[in-house]
Image 1 (cartoon, rainbow, N blue to C red):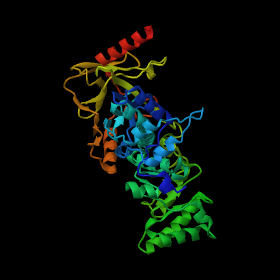
Image 2: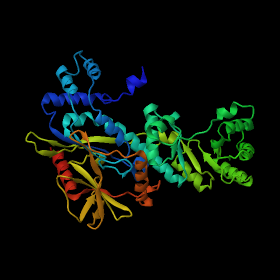
Image 3: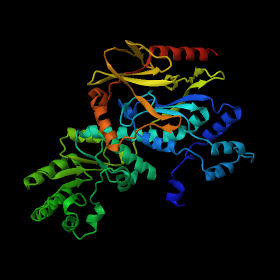
Image 4: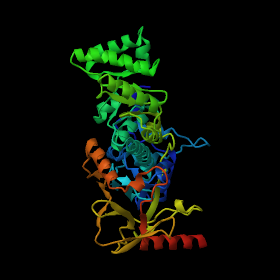
Length: 488
């Protein structure tokens, strides 16, 4: 396989689940393919048992939707698919319909870098049900993963308390796309650089890195290894000091540091990758300071995450640069966001909108019906609550929002509060109307959004629940629908 030619194509319309195509054919055969529907993409449960998430991945979705079409070779492949009885899975006339298909839906979405919460629509798709169904899988694939990783990065950076965090996860990422997407999302979430050179090129993210243990092991002595690296990269002299004996490695780094100074350079830093990071960093800082290298940074790696960084900070570790890999790019403690894409409204034969709701024994799995929007309220300094409402129903202020999973949890919304709609237009009638922001702008937005969150929402243990609720009339509409359906 030629990866560049056969896998990473300009369009990836077949990056979907087969049942999207079988349902699409069913809609087409039934004669309802052009009937309008509304779908919403959202996640149900708190991410990492925390108090917030960072939206990410929208630009991947925008690029895919702009290139949405079926090429002749896509249709050739689909024509080869067979049912268990050997007959063609997809009809020839239906495949011809796909070949002529143009994307004409309206899409609204919460912009990347915003803080978001369970049950809130991150994306709303409105248009012919065949098209709106076909885009489900890619939207979930793009937004689920990057939102997860951006959130993980934000948590890690929060634990680092302003120290720079470097993303070093490519070698442990889930494949090429997993590595690239994770680097991008980590940068949005707060990391200052990546080791991923291709991500640096594609996304214009700063890249960082020096040497590994193999560099030191390739020389007769640790000192010789440091001297050789300093000669090769005098302006990037950061030495990995734990190949043999960490504290002796620090002393050897200092020896080479003095030689660097004689040539007009300096010892930029040392890196610790094993052992008791708190103790070793404290001792390394003492040795460096006593030798006159007060400005030499101490970087650390070794399976770090937000909890270990928080613990090291509490132990007085003298680390001021954090390299985080595996636990960031794999989101090891929660490897999936769990986002879903649900039908919430559908036009009947008369062209009238009907609310749609899916029942479940679990209250959290009952979707919110309607054509939804999210309005965020604030006092200018702190965000105070989010209201999920139906655009066709509207609302007045003051109002009360009700937790969709617990009717006893309510919050009053006051008229004097500032407010904004979070879902913004992205596509209208299939045409992109969204001005894509630069990645650095998205990163700044995430930082600013996090600053608006109360500290109790950002803590790792038992975070405070940010108020998200349904507008009262929408809550009652859903409750009435659920009760009616359960009686049938």
